[in-house]
Length: 178
Length: 194
View 1: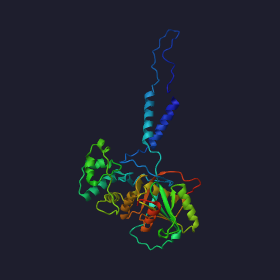
View 2 (view 1 turned 120 degrees about the vertical axis):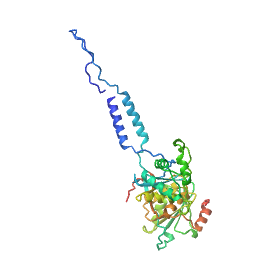
View 3 (view 1 turned 60 degrees about the vertical axis):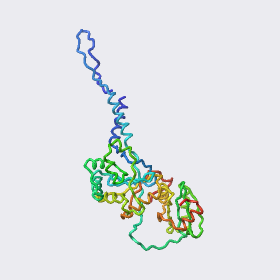
């Protein structure tokens, strides 16, 4: 490795002159390399390379009472998050108008449902109301919020209270224990 | 061997320079993933973690803020901490111990701390009850450092009602904007950010 070749110790000269034996300049680097690899292993294991990302969540101020225009039920898609990674939605009708309760899984199925429904109403009128039920988990909620970002739905709301009508609907049709 | 050693030391240098150590958290949390590409800020951040069993853990990134925060909370609750306890507290990246058990927990030897199951910080659904200790921690950490941003880190399996309690606690203090820490996943093909 990093040695300087000095041609070894004293050669045998013809003249019989005896030279003093030079010490070798080779250094045994094995321990250093060992330590190097040990440190590499340590740093590889101790670092976090992929930094987590974050999504921002803004919720309305509870102290402010804003007068808002009521939204027509015909433009609203209400999504209920159920258990076992199932979502249920109604579209176009309020819960007391005997709407059709559709069941979807998260991911592609859900995305398609949003896109299909969004096409049925004027683009700026489409509203998604997300209602997680108490049997749903955190992942479901993040998945749905992420779907909002993917489908570029601008108007959506996260509402945690179910109305009695909605509760009845979910109990009757989806058999949810809520 | 020279070439290999060169590469090895190059890698070593790289890893030393880019190292950001994993912090020892009170509970391991598997976050859901999202397509959002916003990175979590490195400093001035408080993290409220929600474990899969619904326990709430709280942490602030700077050690100085941790001590100031502890002092503030201790003054309100009428508990005094010794310097050693404060120092031990400042070394914990997050914790999930109710305030009345905190002193006993800090007095444990280091090797036993890891074994104790932390019970989580009490919350409630209104966010303003006396028993809700998360609100005290959030309030006093912001008092210690006004520029703290808030990150919520929930486990995949955490139930929604528990998340709602955390949300209610923050909303009761008029905090309406925060970050949800998620893993990173690729957006669907052809998707473009606005």
